[in-house]
Length: 244
Image 1: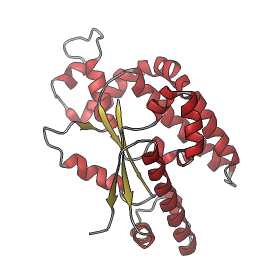
Image 2 (image 1 turned 135 degrees about the horizontal axis):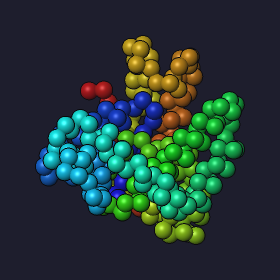
Image 3 (image 1 turned 180 degrees about the vertical axis):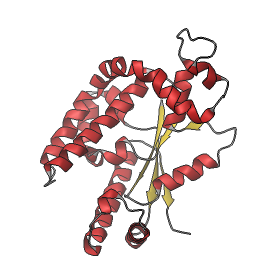
Image 4 (image 1 turned 90 degrees about the vertical axis):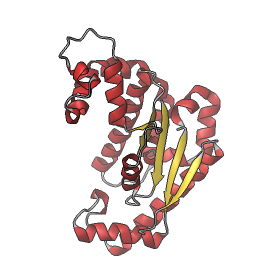
C-alpha cells in the first residue's frame, strides 16, 4: 500500500482539505480513502460467493451507499489472521511508543489509557491493510505520523530504522501533505468552532490562554515532524491553510 498522510495542528483543516481533494478527483487520479481501499479489497477476495452476494453487489456498483458496510462484513473474518500475522512486524516501534506515553506528563490516567489505546488501534489498522498486500495509493487525514508522538524524534527513529530497515519502509509514508498556518490563524479557526458549537473534544473547557498555548504546541510539533520526515527522505508538500 502506498500511504499518503496529512500532517498539521489540531483544527487546522486537514479533513476539509482532504474532502476538497477527493471531490475534485478526475478519472486519471487513483487516490483512495481507507473505506474505498477496503471496498476494493473486499471485491478482490477469491471466496466462492453466490450470484447475489454482497461482493457481487459491490462488483456491479449496486446500492453504493451500502458498500462500506458490506466491505467491513466481508473482511471481518480476516481481522484476526491479519493482526496475528502483521502486527508483530511493528512491535519494536510500538514498544517505543508505549515508553514515550509512560514518560509523557498526562495527569489523568484515563486520558493516558485512551491515547495508548488509540495509538494501538492505528497500528492494527495498518497491519490489517498490510495483510492484503495491495498497491493502492491511500490518503489518510490523520494517521501514524500525525498521531504518534515519537515521529518527531529523529534520533530515536534513526536508531530504530538502523536496526530494522523493513520497519522504516512500513512506518514511513510515501508522502506527507503538511498543512500549516500562523498561530493567530489556527487560534481563530479553533475559537470559531467553539463559538459555533462544532467544538473539538480537546478544546472543551479550555480558557483563551490555554487554547492559544495548545495551538502553539500543536503547530510546533507538526512543523518538527514535517522536518523529520524530510530528513528521512519522505517528500513533503506544504500547504498554507489561510481561511480565504
